[in-house]
Image 1 (cartoon, rainbow, N blue to C red):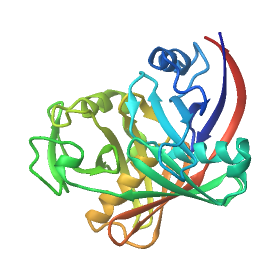
Image 2: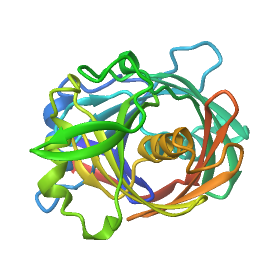
Image 3: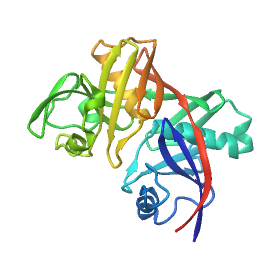
Image 4: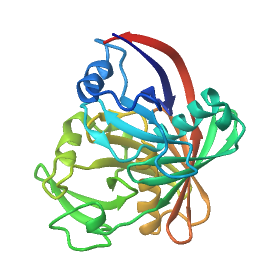
Length: 282
């Protein structure tokens, strides 16, 4: 069987996008995501994102995300910008709009087109409470500057939910970290029963950060939109980044701009780029 897809990337966070608005999510999406995501052996990607019919009246579509290991994620900040760009290009009704609304597993998100292949996402409200992640054995929260032992080493972490769970920790030199050695132990730490995404952050100054991320289900990726939002939220909670100002976060795949608004609302701005259209034999 031949499967048509669009490969897109936001800050090098690359997924295969399937038009599922009429057909629905493929029945065997888990093995399909595992097979097609394998780098060097197949198309290669961080996973598959299915663009489905909207669930909410007035919405323009629904995003469902399947990681490279086949697990389903609630939200992907880089992915949702690419979904908006895909709809803008492929759906004539969406092409006429400057604002799109997209359903996700963590609620309805609003996106505004800021320029050519550039979108701003209203990411919603973040939380540092344990029940929202979820997290256990760490108190009720806010989980700010909490001690966490990982593989026998003490870390200081701040835990943030932005519709999916994140663990943020500060480091002196983010480029020198061997994430493949430490990331899995964070991801599968028993304090996080649904596993966790982990961000390792170097502070350049109050409005400029460097970050690397270990994503649950995907390993190290070159960018993570929700993780970038969680990072800035965590540093705002610690008094290291300002409220109401743009914070620029340098990732391996590019830069995202995050702003925390009063009331813990998050805005994310970044690019969404089409790499190519393809057909895979599955």
